[in-house]
Length: 193
View 1 (spheres, rainbow, N blue to C red):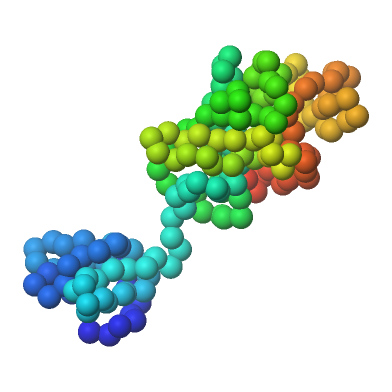
View 2: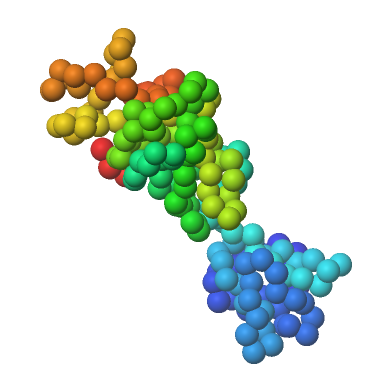
């Protein structure tokens, strides 16, 4: 058996009597099959066979910088849907529902979560915990809202001296914004403008 070989899902890669299935493989009827498209890895020491995916799925890890859409705001937290990991183009696998506790929103004291984030805001956050639930943090200046909409007319808000400004309603709104608010291409993040 070759040490490096390209395989496709369903390809027979080993006999279960000789090798145990490992990541990216499965056994059925005494035969080990590939579950992924990728490179076959044979470990003769452990007597295992695995497949390293060509284009692996993205799973969240502590320390990841992620983009989220705020879905709800409560007294003690903002609830978000994680939509992308910064710098990666693949969809995220697994749970994508996360929360930002009021104490993790800003380095400053936050009295009202609703003044910092509103539903439909696109924010950049740092993953602090993955299991048992996704916990996020936006206290650093690089984290916070990167796109926000006016609460009245839903026009995109632009950064101004006194916060965020709606050109249509001619009103200011408050948000915890990222240092690059307005410069992040959100269509690449969410697939929508």
